[in-house]
Length: 640
Image (cartoon, rainbow, N blue to C red; front, side, top):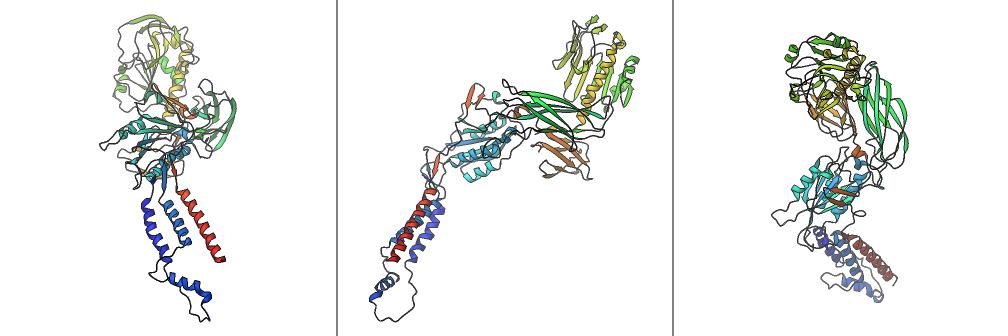
C-alpha cells in the first residue's frame, strides 16, 4: 500500500485531533442560579467536574466515535492506494498517436479516438506506483509522454509526478497530419536506455488505431511493448484527390476533377457539392463500391463550372461518416492567364506555324545563343528545337526536339535511319488523339534514357518520346528533328503541340496555385523584407510573423485542414488551402495486429484497467458510517 499525500494527512491530523480533544476539556459557561436542592442536578455537577481544567478525561463513547470518524477522514485525505503489483520501480514510455485518423468520432462517450486514448493513458498514469514516504517499495514508477503524427513531440520527460504526466497527456491536441512512428520510436529509445542510477530499460505503451504508414519498416528490437488499439468502425467516405484546370480553349471554363473513396463494407451513393467563394455551383451524385480485399472503393467525377475571375473552390461530399477532416477539400483558382511561350530555334517555320494556331498570350522566338545567356527565364513553357543548349534551367516546363538535356548524361554516336514507331502510349495526355502509325523518321540518334524518364513512344531500337518530371522541372523530349520526318505534314503534329501546351500549361497554373497538404510548411516569397504578416488559421486563431531579409515567410503550423489567410501590412490578403488527401489516414479501420518487420504486435484485449485500488472512497464511507452512529448515540442519550 502507498500514500499519495501523506504529509497533507499528517498536518491535518496534527491540527484536527488535538482540537477535537481540547473541546472536551473546555469549561462550560453556565449562569449562576439559586435552587432549593441539588438532588436533581447531580449530573450537572458531574459535567462541571469533567470540564474542569487538568481533570482526567473520562470515558466517552461520543468522543471515541468522533475520533474514529476524524481518523477516517484524515486517512482519506492522505490518499491511500493499494497496489496490485510488487517489485522494483519500472519505467514506461507512453506513445500517443494524434494523427488525422485519430480524430475519427467512433468511440462512444468520447469526442474522438484521441480523447479515448488520453483517457486510457491517464488510467495507466494513475496506476503508477509513487515514491511517497510510506510506500512499500524501494523506487517509484516513472513515465514519459510522447505525442506523434508524422513528427514526434516530447510532452513530458521521465518523472514520477503523476500530475505533471496527466497535464502532459491532456495537452495533446489532435492534428490532421499523416502517421509515422520512426521519429517517435527513435526519441523513445534514446530516452529509455538505462542510466547510471540502476535504472531499467523502459517499456513502451502504444496508444493508436494502428494506421501507421511506416510500421513495416520498423522492428521491435527486443523491447517490451504493449499496444492499445483505439477505434471501432471502418466506415468512412473521403475525398482523396482534387484538381481544377482551366480549359485551354475556353479560359472562363474550369474542369474540376475529384476522386472519392469508400472504406466501408457497403456500396453507397453520396452527393458531391462544389462551391465557389461559398456559393454552391453544382451538386452531382456519385456511386461508390465497398472496400474489397483491403482496397477502398473509389469513384471519380469531372464537373465543369464557370469561373471567369478566379476564387476559392470547395468540394465536399454530403455523406455522414466518422472522420470530418477528409470530407472536403479546397483549391485556389487563379484568374485566366494565357500562356507565354518561348520558341528557341535557329529557324523552323512549320513548328512556329503549329504553335501560332494555339491560343497563346505570347509566342517569342529566341535564338539558342540568347537562351544560353538568360539567367532568369520568365516563360510558362519553353520549346527547344534542333539546338544543343549548354544548360536547361532546373525549374520550368520544356519541350525539346532533338538532343536531350546535358544533365541526362546521354551520349551516343549511333545513328538510326529509316525508323518507324513500333509502340506508343495512346492514352497518355500528351499523345491524346495523336496517331503515330504513319510517322516515318529518316534519321534519329539511339540513346538510353535515365530511369526517371518515362518512355511514351518507341522506335524498334531506341526511345522516341520521353517525359521527365523531376522536382520543379518537367521535360517532354522528342528524340528526332521534325524536319527529318513526315510529322509536320500530319495533323497529329499540331495535336501533339496542342497537348504539350495544354498539359504543361496546366502545370504552370498549378505551380501558381496555393494548395498544400496538412503538415506542409507554408512558404511565401516576394514579400517586402522584415514585414509583419498576420496568419489566420482555420480555427480563427492568429499569429503575427515577420519575413526574413529576402522577403520570405515560413509558417510550419499547418497541422489542421482548412483555409489559412495571410494578411499583409497594407491589408492585402492571400489564401492558402490545406487539405488532407491521404488515403492512409482516410482508411480508419482499426488494426488489431501490426507487423513490425518480422514481429507481430497484437493489441491488448479491452480497455486499460487500473493496477491499483484507491482506498480513500472506503475511508470516506467509513467516516460517514461513524458519523451516523455518533448521531444515533447522541440522540439516544438525550432521550435518557
